[in-house]
Image 1 (cartoon, rainbow, N blue to C red):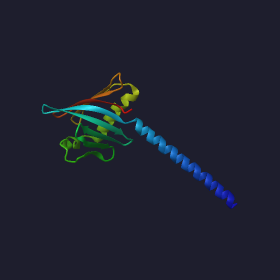
Image 2 (cartoon, helix red, strand yellow):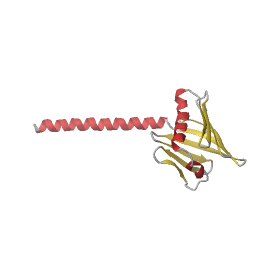
Image 3 (cartoon, rainbow, N blue to C red):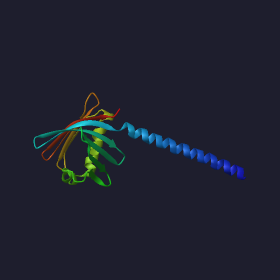
Image 4 (cartoon, rainbow, N blue to C red):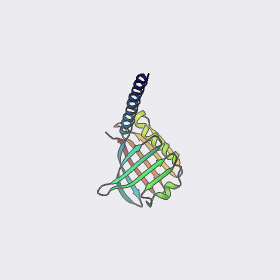
Length: 162
């Protein structure tokens, strides 16, 4: 009887390890396909700035990394469904704008726009908490964004990272 018990535990352990490894590799591939890269132009007080952006959509949050040529990573924005919006560095000048918005609505707007890449649909949004945002899918599979809040205008595009 002890040999049968050892055999069953050994088989169960092998099945458990194989299932864990297969789940881990599926999740990794899923998130790698859903990264987006793009470029944005920011206009504020008649000053133009160009930025590169990388967006990592996750099941309950979106991580946005903003880069500027020659400066590197200048801003990280995390939109979390449970914790709200966090910005690093914390003293960034747009913090007061993001504190007053509904983070769930912003999360849904961004995920719907990024989802337009998969479903070939145009998505437009009206003003939510003082932020006007629209997005549309182009024939070359780029998603165009236009965002306006107070006197800040942001337009650009993202595409899947390949």
